[in-house]
Length: 81
Image (tube, rainbow, N blue to C red; front, side, top):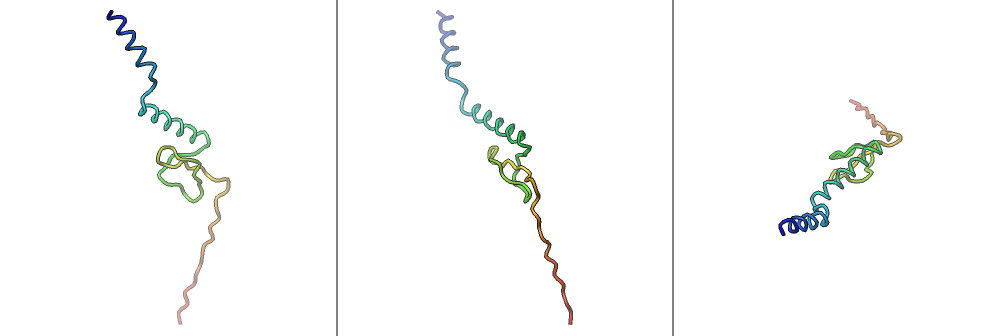
């Protein structure tokens, strides 16, 4: 009888699948791995020459653009009279 109870307990716990926190942890790990596959990085904030591919967990996956944006420098001259 004890063996039957142990067997049924095992069957019910295995058949339920992973718990919700384990599933979320696995999904976050998969997203980080996918981010690394596209040569990106999970950061708090992307730089100007990067774009957001998707979000790892709450942080964006930043991927470097093909070409960096050209930022024109504004030069001003101060004239004194």
